Image 1 (cartoon, rainbow, N blue to C red):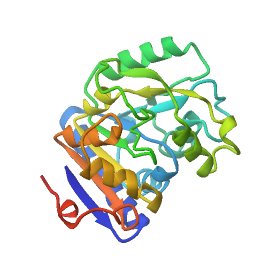
Image 2: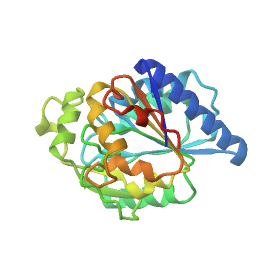
Image 3: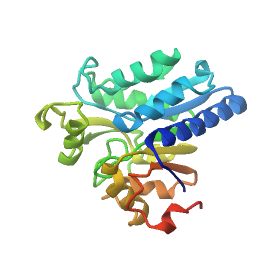
Length: 251
């Protein structure tokens, strides 16, 4: 894992976007297309802004999947991840080839179809973040590290639901759905490359646990250390609790 730290959140986002665009261009050059997985949430806003506006990517050769979606939430709701990706990626780039998770539909069937699609060919690069509870996608602790199903239905814990309120997506925890569709841990790890973007002081504790503690389902993001090609992008605030030896890691 390579860990890159930056003084500001905007510097971090620009560097991560440049890396992401380069990885996508390389896949397009080598294979004629790039298959990507896109994370959502407040932590990804600047990164996706940079990626979709300031980078040279042929988006007509990109296939997009996303990590997760609430069960039962309307696409018109401000917290809908389908809405988020449509507004912040698809409409900005005129991308045509994408699969969005419909949490309002037949959820097991949505998982099955999305799983077949994402498994058809390797994912070239996955963009992910880390939750305040250490979650990866909506795989809250203790996460399932063993299932081979590409997409699964998960229960959202209280810490995860409080985070959604804290970020302003909902007015109260009672409004946050209790379950979601999530890409599984093993499916995330199948991506050829993973770019993890984690700004803000509120992520400092889970970042430290993921990078310096044991690899455990109790800290789902710790499993990223098992992947052979991960780059984690941090700002000064999210990296604040890390040991100096961690910050120079480039193995």
